[in-house]
Length: 312
Image (cartoon, rainbow, N blue to C red; front, side, top):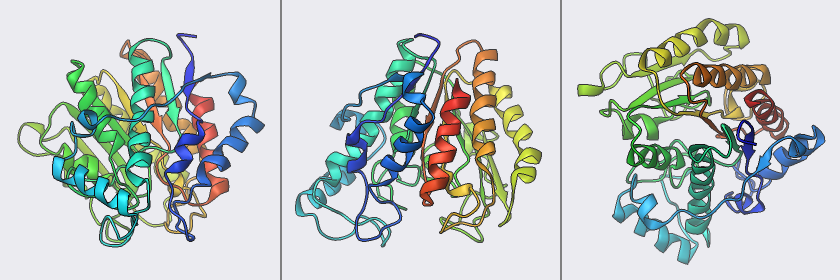
């Protein structure tokens, strides 16, 4: 199975979701799993078991004050964790630490050689900053995973993001870190939350030039992606990362209720396939994909299962 794909489908991931009609509801996992099983993919992958992230792991990216803030809000189950998008609920700390733990479990399976690629559907919480929640994201599993890979001795880690929203928590969390090779295609921040990720944002200090932001106009489709994507691959190839993270949010697909891009699931499949081929050329094959956003349940089911198929 060392050449295979690992996937986490544990019901524990469904604990991370917000009720009362919130776009990020707990039913997003089951929408994916139904399509995953309908395509027979559970028979073709290694099913991985998640764990919860420890405090030490969360503190690799987040501040101690913020972690304690979430713990207190989780106990009370009331209030907001940010300016309005991310409500607290009883157990939100454990649910969010579970998402981070799932991403770390998949990352560790790749690093141990149990699989070459992996996918975690409820993951890729790219808006959370080091010291605050944002945009439905409580703890930033992407950021924690990057920090853990660096602790493991990797010198260059790539983070690629095709979610409609800019991965601001990751970008600003590592804006001055030359070890993080960042590439993000997203809807132009003049039209969509979080209003960041402009083309001139390329990293600071020693990290200048290691970051690539590609803002896209509302309505951008597969043809626009095809035009821009080779620049992303060239950017990554130049820096030869030793591990590739893909945040493959399905809210960039046509028909999402809160965004304006018009990709098809074929874009997500191409991204997964091309990044796998890049990782193979670089000699390690390591790609970890995370589901990210996506609020049309049919879209996310189609996009994420297409990602799994193409990681193969």
